[in-house]
Image 1 (cartoon, rainbow, N blue to C red):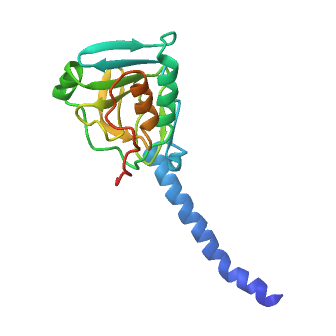
Image 2 (image 1 turned 90 degrees about the horizontal axis):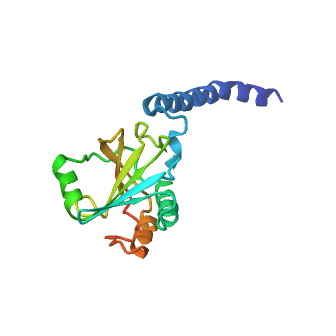
Image 3 (image 1 turned 180 degrees about the horizontal axis):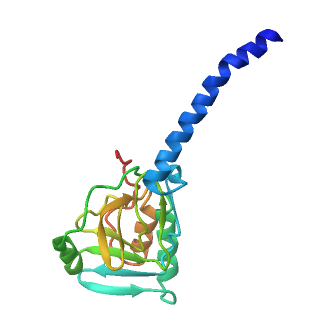
Length: 187
């Protein structure tokens, strides 16, 4: 009995040190990401309130009541619920890229009434709009560019599985480049 008590007394400082190190690591990430659930690699509030599809220069507004709204919103929610990166993808949308998107290709813009929360080690801010390239520049990578207040920010998140969204677009008659999950991210 005495040996067991002394054994635990010796181990106790190491246990407390381990708990302290884990707590410090967790709290540093909380302060860095401004998110208590940074470790989950998912997203909250990803069901869009309205969407805009740009296909070869044509703009199609999809909002509640539009026949394509529910299948697209369900697919967007499913694809965006899990992300596949621990840092923002280091890419932005230049004026030239945005002009290309407006003239040709296929992109999907998602708009939200409440900011999206990405639970990730990446500091994503509080985006209220996402741009997903389906055909054209940056397509086929599962990227969702972040934005808010009518502006696109630098950086994107990578969907773990964009297939539900791309499949829904294809079923609704929009050309989808890729209907397979994106390759795992290295960042």
